[in-house]
Image (cartoon, rainbow, N blue to C red):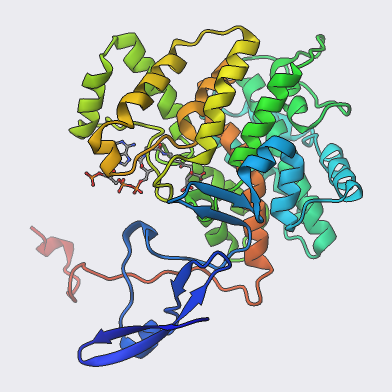
Length: 429
Ligand code: SDX
């Protein structure tokens, strides 16, 4: 703790300690505010409120910095793999060769889903939203691991983490195959995490396919970029649910539901639908931008803006570059990429966006790569969930390994009806 913050209210002064983070972020500790002053704080959307002290991810929104456990996203996406980055996020250190091998063995051991789970996919309508299926099936997976639902110690926690990370991709691929009427493809023991996912998504039981190494690497890097992002909506949801001592499967399933929203992880779907609409209507970009600035009903520049980044999202920079690599490798000319690049060029010069510090975020270009790889649009947010799973697991663990597990229970200001008595229905007009 360093200096104190002083609050003066109705003629009295109160002091509150200020906590200083390892990157010199300052947080006023108001844990005694109500007891001392009778006041609570109000902060719609928690834009100014820290919910926790965390050691996992650091973001500097003004300078466009993102680090996982102190390592920059630029170095991790360049030199690491998704499974190694997941280990780093969850356990706090880059793994030794033996530790990584053990983690890979756990991921491989748990890559199948219980055969009885296959029948659950038949129960969903073909039009069922993949995020609804994913959330339901993550909870279902917990029913088949009752001994691990509430990990009691470090080794069972590591196994539970590996189960969730491994099965989330098997469930995603199985739900896709079921939705298109193709047989579910079993994972292989000889493929790495991401290659195995692409194998389960696009191969057939009677046809072995070999995902292009460049495509596997690009998708693995996309998963790295999505792996964590401090207290975003879905991660805060996982912490909130986990704080009640709900198990890791239930907490991750809740995180999936929060991520689904178009203002959060659902934005990658909304971006593609926005670009397709502009392209098909042949709408001039300046007209579209004017509609955005007028706040025309339902018109937002999806994939732009961020609660924390008031500068270019470092993830978007990398994904934009990878778009060109992947499309060139696949020999694809996607007019939506050109449209997105032009839209960015127009927006970043427009005072409306400049004044509000609105830049492309992680979702602006990611859908173009996923589309090129052949991922259906309604599964884009599922891809975000696969990437974010280690961040959710790491945050759930941090809530549970804190000195004292405190249930998250915010206060409120009530502005509803004053006291009134019940009236029999006969008397109500
Ligand atoms: C993710 O939190 C995370 O870390 C999330 C994430 C992660 O990794 O977990 O980074 C992933 O969710 C990225 C964001 C994806 N969502 C979108 O791309 C949807 C479009 N973006 C916006 O809806 C918005 O920018 C948010 C939701 C991302 C942030 O919302 P805020 O911080 O609550 O900002 P706001 O809505 O209060 O906007 C401030 C101003 C407003 O203008 P005024 O009303 O003051 O005139 O900026 C405007 C907004 O209208 N604005 C936009 C805009 N985003 C903000 N105007 C047009 N288009 C936009 N996209």
